[in-house]
Length: 266
Length: 299
Image (tube, rainbow over all chains, first blue to last red; front, side, top):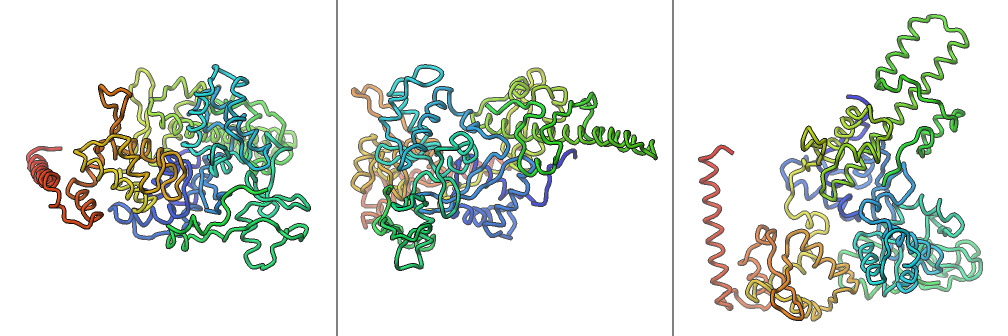
């Protein structure tokens, strides 16, 4: 065997299935990582030892190293759920989208991305995006067509949509992190608490720092007096409870009622 | 598309940049020995070292430069293999065969003389890491496809999201379709869902985007069929059971589900009940004949 196709991890069909599902779905959640191995046990070809989610992922990553890809763990910006995506370490472009979209569609994505990053809220309105349709590279695109393309972005988990406004999906934030930082070094925002890329979040009205909602929720969890992590001034925004997967399962129905903050805040 | 590799200008992952140390940035011209496989290169280096027991400082520097050049060639080869793996995975998702000339054009570039080795290594990665087999469709035209070596597991959706919301929604739709005589107009389906507080394009905390879930996921996964009803103006569409629903559940099971919802017995709907009974009988017969055939033929 030439080269290094095998590293420290051992791949079984459970790992392979997880990878295939991750590629099909684009992004998976923590509960998927927990559930899949257990489900595979029911199928005869899997062995009984079930790894912890972190070990499961690390195992696969050690094998993926030689392919310059990695399963990266992130957290959704609005409700703090852990998610996993497959990130390409070698190229810094939106190359993964390139195979699914035409040149003008990719340009639409880039234009929307720029609006999203420049915005205060992390959202770009459909109107503003569609107004840029004339400036697209490649074949001419009509606004009606562009609407469909935007929906395609949402379906393929590159963008999220809320009430006619578009933001980046957690998957895109994970996969395009490097690309975004390199392409928009001045406009890019970073969370003061976790230091990763910030698209949606809250900001301090005194010192201007920005934080992810789940990050500040965790930070303020134990504090009765909410204050800015940087300047200590009073934190004026509503902060939701920290995401708890156990609680989520039990109270499925009432979760949307309990959640006090779903909209963007600034 | 994936960037075409150019010598020296490939984006190198951070760890490697550190290993390279002071030579980073310098473009060592890849020597003619590039034509040899990395192992042959390394073998040649060892031979040279062995035949020159006492290297002069100049000789040592030349040897070091050659070793570095070969290591770079190896790394470049590794990266090309990695890019080819990703390229093949991406192309395969569109379900069209991949040609050798595409691979050379978009990934392999001027390493095309090493194509056999590169593709062999890529194939091994695909097999070991992802569970795909790279198969050549025909020898003459050099087209390839990926075959999934993993056995399809039942209830793949269940494996991920667990039973619960989405499959429950599916059952409601299957129930509606069945009770309406094995097909239901799209408008009827949405009317029922609206009563449950589910709107097509409004994000739902359990189902995500219901329209996408039903029209795309369920249809794509073959749980539902979706087709235009002929001779309707304005054009209407209808849903019926997809082949996967017939495999994973049955009319009797769905009738039972509907019955439970209404707190009644399945027999409460005599037409549907008779149809479900007939379906059960068909399934039993089909099962028996498959077993009979299997025992007389060599499959």
